[in-house]
Image (cartoon, rainbow over all chains, first blue to last red; front, side, top):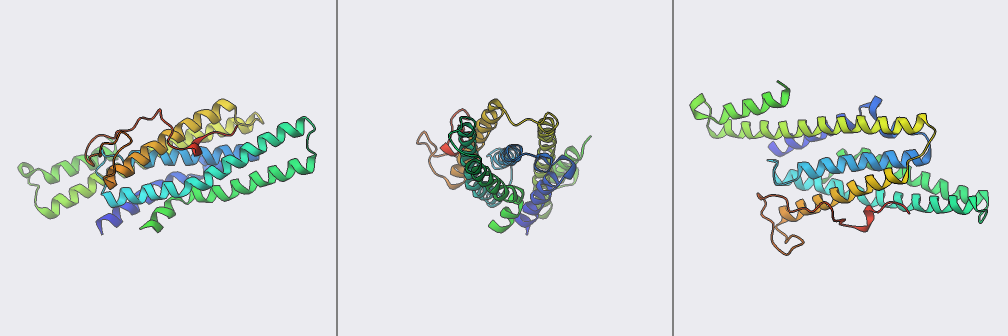
Length: 135
Length: 126
């Protein structure tokens, strides 16, 4: 009961931060690169908070700390894949600028990045839900 | 005085027998209050950071620009440090040895060297 209350409050506090619509970095971004950066930055900010909350200096119950850690680590692979796609997009842009690849090939790589951003974004935004699911 | 300070103050009063506090139920309530204060404080801090980050993104949008290499590098460094901290915290919770081979006490200080990248996944795109 107590763990559940603590966890739910963390969920509520983080959800409040994530859903502050006027201040949502991901909603503000427009280009694919901006969206990738906004998604990555949002993830890092939440990840840093998870690190602080789960440190030995906080009084949270160990089970709650484990749930927070699991949620943060669960989102990492999708973010990593998005970063790999971004790296490929940057290489493709250089190749396109050097006329080594045509526009359609370049567009495929950019679309791929956009796809990974779309997949990573809800994962980051639902980090809270992931904590709930880990319980 | 903010809400966090008030919550912590109430928790202190609840556990102090000299002030009429004490008792198992009351102490559990005080512990919960302390934890809630920690969580609310964390949530507020996160919200503030996200608002600041939104301004950074808005600046990019306004200038029709994209993130610079420096911005990506800075974010990657923060990512690596956060991952290292979380992994160290996980090991401490599970009683696993830290990177230096010593078991981390759960109640002890976090033995994190934030300058060390824990995984290659924190690398920025090249």
